[in-house]
Length: 289
Ligand code: CP
Ligand code: NVA
Image 1: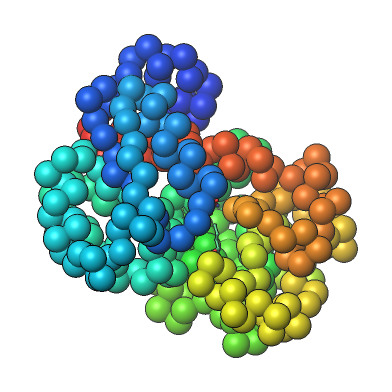
Image 2: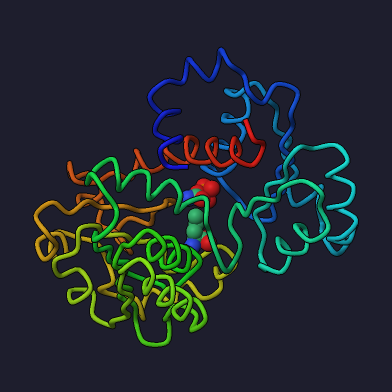
């Protein structure tokens, strides 16, 4: 998929001409806000000759206006694929269970796999490979951390999560990532000191301290996460070839320092662009085109 995503990145014109998704529609369900996910999926569908429909919280009101089961059963009668950004992970699983067409997780409270496809594409393009690369995730053991642990371990990357005590990734994810790492040769580690996590890392990655749905905890988290920030001190501790990643949106001055985010080693905007290419490759695979 990453090879394909790179091919797509290098020649947008070829995709526009070929229009492999002509006549196909992606239904996009959003329970939460989005810039990158919505726009990258929608522009991706347009580029590939297809169409995307945005269904916001007002149209969906899942479990209130319509059950998850009926929503999926109806949508798959019209659309070729469904993409969903939801709160509970059980919702995206429920959609997948009741849909006859592929369902893509566009972020749940538990995982953000499309983000990680783009991240792996970006890391490979910048560092020349994935196996043996060490990635340090600095911050909350959240959905993005979960998907990085699983995706990273799958491709042989060592993943270190540096988080405050009490904000570790889910035990089940750590177990699964460790298991995947056993097959690929990757290691998985959790530490509670950001500097220790960053030491010698090839990729410094961070995400917001309070995710969507945790707005009420933001002030408390600001206290607990102090110091879990990508800044010059952490960059100096990382490997010489280290790159900086952030899935965005960023809260400058919290999990990342603005100046660090603009260093030449920062790939945050390549990463955002690659969302579209990686997802196009994913959808091409799902559609068999
Ligand atoms: N990284 C990401 O998923 O961004 P959005 O929340 O803007 O979609
Ligand atoms: N962890 C963040 C990721 C945003 C792309 C959130 O869930 O809000």
